[in-house]
Length: 354
Image (cartoon, rainbow, N blue to C red):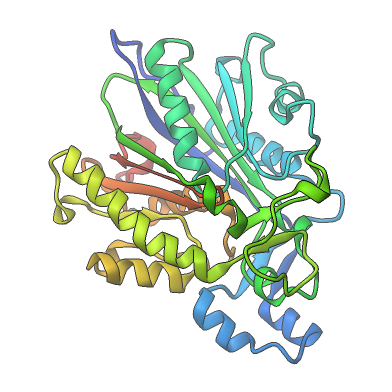
């Protein structure tokens, strides 16, 4: 959609459904490339790492730059590009695992900073790589219930704050980013078949155990010995095993309940964890990799932002035709996972005639 166009909400219907409207992405200015890391750590095999991760560079938040700063910039870009009236926002949902403070709620700070109405609801939720799908479900519920007509879903992460500079495993994977998505009421359903999963027994595979109210002596211990001094710990092999087992099963369950088959799905849009993980999942599912896009080479794993970044890029390439059924899936820290079916019914995502 061009910058001089105005986003107009769909007229109210007897029953409204959430439609994924425009998306805006904001990345920090600083870009850390694998060549930068090679100069800093000549003993790291960056070629082998890039082959496994599929990542060549990552945006990194500046010192003092927080997730809310990134989210603010993404929201401002969304409002300006699509000429969205701030007073039309009924609810702000903010997904992050790197909030500004333990309290107050960061979404409350964003409501004030963005100049939104004081009649606007605001809610933080702490989820990582499954967060975007959870956010879509929350927004859909608010709109279906009549509590909101337009929901601003913000996802923003600065995992780099938790990573030690010498951590070869994590520093080569995670990038910082923010995405702003407008969910608006529409008469036709475009999101359906939501399904969720949780297994808290896997909390020791990906965690930051300090900074909360739990005393250090009682904190969750990492599953294996920590190799680096990062506050963030990740057991990559265990996460891959969980993913390649749980996610194909989740997808089969969603399709079975909706009486669909894999060939009826246009694109399997998955959380962009690493190339190796997604390739193993595609192989396990018997899905051609052209139908399961991998697009993280220049941004890395941006946690709750990977799906909106992927959707935004596919829209710009004209790769989400109207009427086609896609599947959205997020998975990771928690352990937590979620999936749903989606048709891109937003007119602004379709190629415009010349």
